[in-house]
Image 1: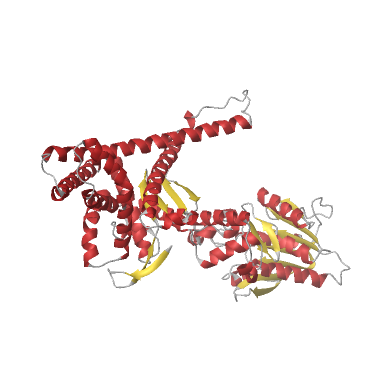
Image 2: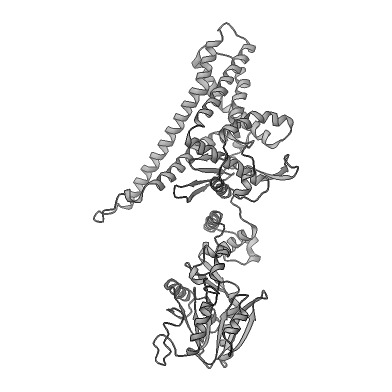
Length: 596
């Protein structure tokens, strides 16, 4: 996909890529060897993306690896896909623009169409889209042939007398026709570049080039870095068109100059594949080499890009970068490994020899796409599961249980075993702010004889804890409760026992003002309810301090997860109790053990 070459700008090595693209309506399409991706900025500001995988023609048949033939195939594929992506971007744009209020309301009395009718409607819709695309391609070709083949050929025939024949005059006639084509082409570009929508399109064209150049220079793909790159690129389609016009002079000089206009036009149309194939090979050659000769050969095409590209803004660069990253389909090595581990459920040591099924491969590609679109998305969130203390837990939007919290679970398990008295006593455990039920389920798994109760203020968390318990065949009681509020300190309490031998809590303990500075993977994807511990981060510890004595049995243990910098505050808050601060395996203060 890419290789390293010397960069003439600074003498350093840079990576060249085969990824190319084009501007579409309010977006950019990027295409690698086997992925086509498009990103479009909708009126709402949201970026809509779509990508598809395909088998390259050269892998389908060795015929498409033949020089010139591969150029013709690339030319045809690019033209067809270009129209498809333009239609796709317009479709995204129009769907977003349609006001919800104007959408026809469903008549509840009317029966829904049967499945077969729906499928027939979909087929008809796809057929209509295909027909529209074919008509668009045909009209585009007709206009191009009329402007760049028929008109220059016709005018050249009027200028030169029929009596002027021979190879030399044929070359002159082709040179004049090429000059007219170039003049018409440049004039056409200058004319349409004054249109507002075309200016936007050319800005996205510039964003496409800047993004590719940013990657090739080895810079991190950010709008800020891309903005420093040139908006001209030597593999641009504009350069390709210019090369086609020049090579047509050479090719058609050997075909003669037929007196009849229609004969000249047919010969030139028939010769388009050959000219396109040769132009592709020359374009690729020029892109691979950078010296005074090749720079002179590239100059006209690069100059034309002053018209076909405009300076993009940061939002347009963001769109182009996202499209490029989707086509590149690469994440950092650790993230890729983590995705594969979650998709396969195998051990890290087994990963190199693991054979992924087709379904698993599709899942991996889907998750990679999600994380490319949103780099802050945790792998656990993408798979809607996390591993904690040897348990697989569904997340369903709850806080992702951290490895640090395993220290709290470990202390709880040790405390239960210590109090169990050789298995003769049923130890009662209450886990507040349970989230997915991680700590409660870890205790129940390791100490099946324990009676485990858990609670959370969030109804979804309670539901998730119950679902995880059912999936793991572990019996716990989950209750919706704002801290202790649902538990009455009464010997006849209906929900749970009057007193608990062990109470565990992993409360929200992040200071409100700090939440905005947290890593995007946390602040964008974990529920705020599970993070915000108030102005000083101690809001819930105060609630626990005021209430836990009513629920903790004599000689019971209260275990709290705490922030790495909260140990002294917790000691002061629970002054008068026996308190021990336990560090996690990273050496940070993590658990406060408080005995009644």
